[in-house]
Image 1 (tube, rainbow, N blue to C red):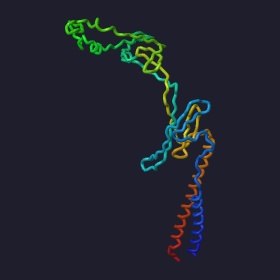
Image 2 (tube, rainbow, N blue to C red; image 1 turned 30 degrees about the vertical axis):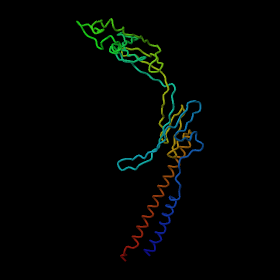
Image 3 (tube, one colour; image 1 turned 60 degrees about the horizontal axis):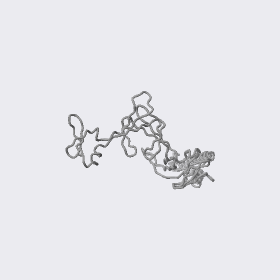
Image 4 (cartoon, one colour; image 1 turned 120 degrees about the vertical axis):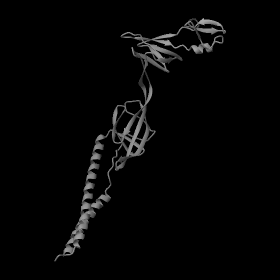
Length: 284
């Protein structure tokens, strides 16, 4: 009787356990997908956003396996980058007071007057005396000093005071609001302060937007949900509601799956326990 009752119980729990496991084995895990997303892009694809003539380019799509560390499992992380050229990017540069700058191939020293609110500065040429002497076949390549004054030696014997031989240093004045050609850019003197002179200009610059999987990203003033269904595709959609519904459905599926695993484990463990107890020797 003991073994017969155990056999009936074993069959009962086996049926339940096998049924739970069958549901797990045959169930298909739901995934996120979108019908007619705004953009389905591959690396190298170009696209524009409604209301803008800016062209965007998918510059990269990557998939990397990252380790959880400290014994944690690894996970696949997908991401990408969108590049575009900003035709009116803002740039600035400050010439510190006393520093050296180069304009039109000439080096100048920046001199800001020692006043409380300067509005202009003077650029003083840094004259290359050595180059001037080397270009003069009649002059020695080095100056000499006599009684504390510098001289240029002409034709090996004639001494000409350096202040008379060399041309006067060129000076240029720059004031706030002036336009100035600098490093192939048309710049504006935005500010003159005791610390230096600030130039500003606009120019084209390539900029990038980092895109994370299942993360919000703003492109051209429009917010999208980014999703990478595989290692080579970037999907951009504004259907946030559908995404939330699908993720809720996936979460519910996993909760149900975990529950079925629990039932299967309990049933199979009970079967083993019942079989063991059925063959215990009887005390009567």
